[in-house]
Image (cartoon, rainbow, N blue to C red):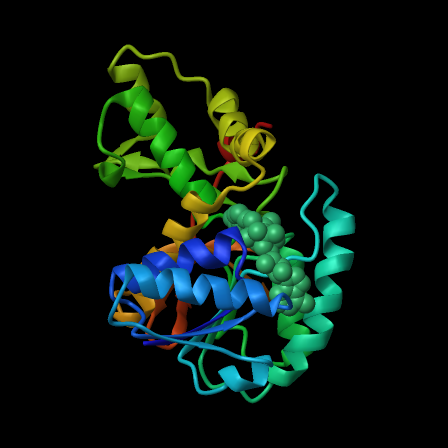
Length: 278
Ligand SMILES: NC(=O)c1ccc[n+]([C@@H]2O[C@H](COP(=O)([O-])OP(=O)(O)OC[C@H]3O[C@@H](n4cnc5c(N)ncnc54)[C@H](O)[C@@H]3O)[C@@H](O)[C@H]2O)c1
């Protein structure tokens, strides 16, 4: 797979390493406004992995031949989502119109994720099935990791979701979250474990900020999410991810089936008032 990465900071470079080492990408295209950084990431990665071809390009239009482009750029990372949006919207204004003829898939990790997905889709005019954000996929992964520790059961057996905004207002969709055919809440109760829905939800929501406070980056979680999403596309796995997709002039995370052509279809859910108690 030929994959373009825009922004070779922590998220872009960790994703490049995973995509190359897991043999999802055999050819990578790097673009960063800091070309020296993109070149240094290329050389470092070439030292680690021998069978991947890496091109550092001067403009995103050189990525039109890629199968997929990852947005991992950021001009500003801070606690204020509005300032972040202003800075990253300006980058979208510059690059998205250049990608309007792109035939592949654009996956967006840049924050604030839902807003950037919305503007990138509008500015590129691409089909929303081909341009979408990681949304609450990382938060869903975090939720499963937290539940796994509390329940002492593999995260692979936990079918739980965070939905809506990738930010402070996202929610733990407990009514549809299960282990086998048992609702997550009942699973806690049956195992004599304390079930504090709001505490679990809060732990997921604050997890990124808690990591960021200390290390100023949060690249491992999101790069593994990116790997899972791109592997699903490459292998046409038709897995369900909570992705941020533009629909009816809004972008937020809902459950979508993903395959080689991007979003295959939306999977509707029977949410209920239990999900809205916060
Ligand atoms: N969606 C998620 O769940 C999630 C998780 C973690 C991080 N993120 C987001 O991913 C983005 C990147 O985070 P990071 O930690 O890698 O940041 P970083 O600062 O390490 O890297 C950002 C890179 O973008 C480059 N850049 C700046 N302006 C550019 C432009 N005009 N064109 C191309 N490249 C440009 C910078 O030179 C830098 O190398 C941020 O928006 C961050 O909030 C998202």
